[in-house]
Length: 365
Image (cartoon, rainbow, N blue to C red; front, side, top):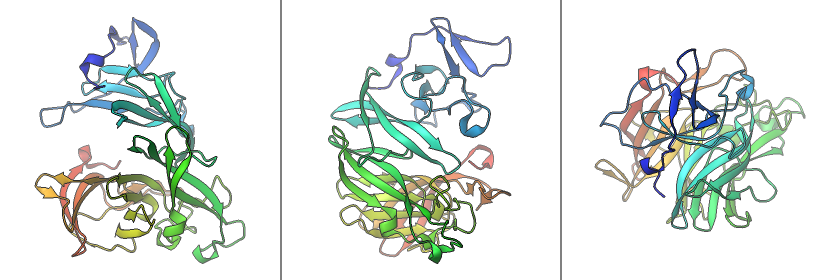
């Protein structure tokens, strides 16, 4: 399947202009109330053509009192025209909407489940849809665990990878716990599961390989949970993204609470190197420094730079900001957010910024 103009819904759209509205209405589909994309900077020839995958949060998302009339996954053109509405296909909380190639065909993956606010992790599973937008299968956490929404990737035609967050009770006195009640810590896991049976084939645990002492959000700060119960569990690591090279079985992990990107050996589970944070293995060049990042990815090449020999090309989104869960101003490392492409030299232990894409207006995201 190619998600192109040939798949556009043949709908007659009528934009409601008589009063303020955030929804598109369709004469041929009066049951739909589609969120309007407010495109203030139109796409140009400088941007690659493509479709926009969008999952607006459900009404009253995170107790904010606002949200779309119909939450769910949506596909738009870069001009804001509707291609597909997934309202009713999945539950009201859907995230991480992606396209994959699975068993030789293009498929869609959509996380559906619930959200632990304000801790930021999810509880659910990933729904897979075929090229006719029909449900193909549901891929769930193995070992009676619920999957998280942050990452989902097919490893091959028979297995998939996803994040799982599991609260555990540990002795946290070495990390500043002042009472026995402060004993809950969140273990961040990657599971590889069989896509036909959901059986766990492999699992990696952050607590087995990364010391919580390296976090930027200490237990005492209250900015990542107070550790007093499973809902207020201490989120010391916060793995919000990972990527994998299936040929070498090496992983790239983003640990937001640590402001660190890790390279991990999937055969042993051991950490190969750390970029950023308190214990970086690299000397950071101008502009490389980051914090509260998302979306880490490995690349074979970028422009004339290649991942070859001791050189590795990675990208990530440097948020540079984090909500202050303890109250007060946001935690901020720089006044703007940016996408970054970085060249690492694993022999010289240097990190060089080769591209930066700042948020429009230089704002924080």
